[in-house]
Every structure is written in structure tokens, then in C-alpha cells.
Amino acid sequence: MEIALIYFAVLALAFFLLIVRPQRRRAQAHRQFVATLSVGDEVMTTGGVLGKVRSLDDEVVELEIAPGTVIRVARMAIAQPVGSLPSGTTGSDSEDNGPNDDGRR
Image (cartoon, rainbow, N blue to C red):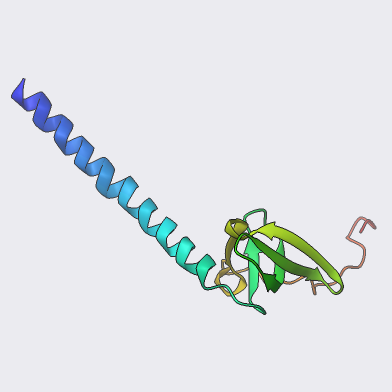
């Protein structure tokens, strides 16, 4: 019986150290990032929309996603700065928008 309790305690400790603690650190880093947002920052939302911060409120951020197109999103929906996108992703829509190989856009 004692071995089962020790085994359970070791599993609970491993779960905490490998899952709960790193998640808390990520959440704290995200809260800190969102708190330090400023006008002009280029960001990506949790839905993958890229834009530049045009105005900030306590709960809402206005993002310019194209010249003259501004959307309002919840401040906590901002996922990361554009500079931290994975390698191989440009973060801009400046690529050739011509037809694809099959003639479609």
C-alpha cells in the first residue's frame, strides 16, 4: 500500500513539473506581453490575423489589417508579436498575388 502512495505522489509531482508549471509560465508571459502592447506594434491574433496596433483600450485593441481596414479584437486575443513568427513564415501578404499554376487566384 505504501508503494502505491509513493508511486502516486511521484506521478503527481511529475505532472506538476512537466505540465502545470510550464503552462503557468506561458500564461504569465502572455499576460505581460499583452500588458505592454503599444500603438504601432505588429501583432498576430489567436485566429492568425496579422495587423498593426492603431489604438488600445483596457479590453479592446484596434488593428489595421490592410490600408484603411481596421478591426476591433479583444486585447487577450493578441497571441504574439509578428517578429516571433516561426521561421519560414514571412508575416506579410506582399507575395505575388497573381494566378496560381492552375490559373486560379
